[in-house]
Length: 494
Image (cartoon, rainbow, N blue to C red; front, side, top):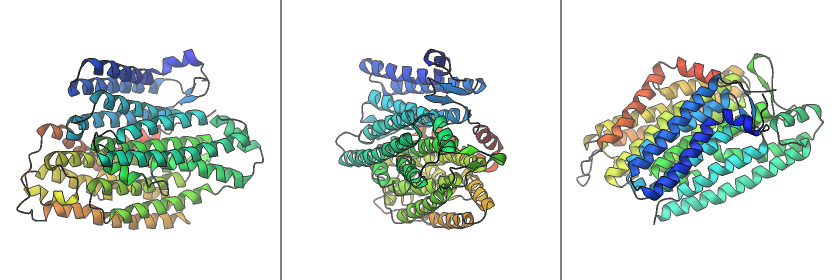
């Protein structure tokens, strides 16, 4: 299926509904100042877009808008992911004292616009669309990072994010220009065909891929493109930090998989992918994966701010996800998609507890969690312990299944990939130290006489309890999610 502009609109309803919601929020914000009204409109729009996305699973796969974007199960998976993450973030924002200080209409408008950008990142079938969609996500993220008024930390984080993003974006588009020069096309299918037929310089092609990887890596947050992450996580409004922690990794993985697998590689028997011959791409990803998880975990060890610690934790988890990309087969990609979903649940849950405790104490330092379980917050403390142990990869939680799938895929490859698996296991052991340290602080440390009892708003538990339950349930009964992720690897390839 290769549709023109007007014909493509029949398969574009999720984006149309989300865009209409964004415009509606701008208008309603001029008339209404109620946070709950604006949040309700945002959630209804996301739910409508989600239903339209599910309806497209029965549609024929193919190209839309003159081959600019693509409709297949892979793009639909990340649309569902982006919408679920947005709905949960809006829900979290309703209970955040930080968000009450900002302009609600603008906040929800930018948040939904960022989700729309993720839509296009996952469905891009052209380098131009990929670049524009990544910039749409980046520009809205810069603004939302610096959205807290009269907050120097927030403004500083936004400025750093902008500078790092500009450099990564320029590097990426430079690499794209090399690809265009070698193949004469921006279309992924045409690029793949040209690389298969022409004798291009492998060194030049490798350098172009490295430049492009810089832009994708900046979104996925792996070393050495990670330096913006800790400051941005610490300075941004916590609900948006939660969204960024899961959506940025997922969007980076989506655009990277779309380009480096169906875009550049070709499918061979048994679910394996053959990369461009002469370019040792798996070894590059293997090395970057090991460095990323190691740097992330080691830097997290001595952090005193919980948001900053979760930022370095996110870098480490990006390294784990890269393991699935390095093996160049569908089992690895499926493990990445599974891990993206469970990471969404457990990391959003952890940030929700951060929001709840920050509302009560006005503090995000780990010291403020001292004796938390005995200061009137035993349920948030227990839920945070579940999320942290799941992030470590301990059974019987969802994070254990996610890491098990990734490790199993890598070990099955044998050879040098066994070294990667060993490094990943050692890093999981290292991560247990700083995750368990927070659990120790909450349950075993004695509160100081000056530490007051906390009062937690009951409405936050309506989201916290389901996220905790899902973290446990998916660690015990995960076959439906495994099946869904396997079906999401149906790429459209001519």
